[in-house]
Length: 273
Picture 1 (cartoon, rainbow, N blue to C red):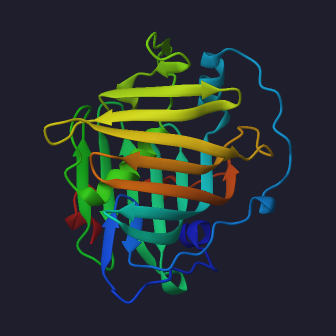
Picture 2 (cartoon, rainbow, N blue to C red):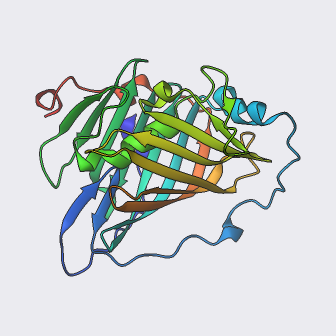
């Protein structure tokens, strides 16, 4: 079941001569040669429909319209000047679980991160077949991320958390922005900027080493053939931590059945060996 859901048969990660493997968040960071982003013409040319409702209604509709998601993506990551590209699969089960798998040569899994929240804390488990022992984590609101390898996958979990557990409120100092309940994302603050098709930008504030870590997100190029008008490009950046990533969605399907076992999180690194 797991292999059928996440196998990407044409995945290629092109590794440069330096041969150094460094994983940050959910993305494999290597000295690599980068394939080009898929042409926009590969996406359906369905025009985006006119969207109705208030800004709050446009923010909250995805909470009920997307229950699960399976997406194949290509991620470009920049860390301290090093650029890399890797293909992978994102699995989402609303409201509490996200899994990100990355593949190397021949479809081999090189990174596998799972995050599951219970309303008060989020537990994470990261398998690293090529670079070390598994990592088990538990974080509560306001706590910083102790492992650099967990930063981006945790951010992806946060972005898929429901936005409207409590009603969003307007930010008087920033027209167009709404303040969300930060506890939904285990964050210090969570804000979104609303456009005519939904959320265009999101901002997470997490605890950091002395200063908060602000994670800025842009949602671009929506797939208007889908009911939820999901973006096909997500840009994420953390200036405090010195990384940024562009996630290009190659294919995605929403509201398909996903086995709960795909999101099992062992209690410790020992349990995952």
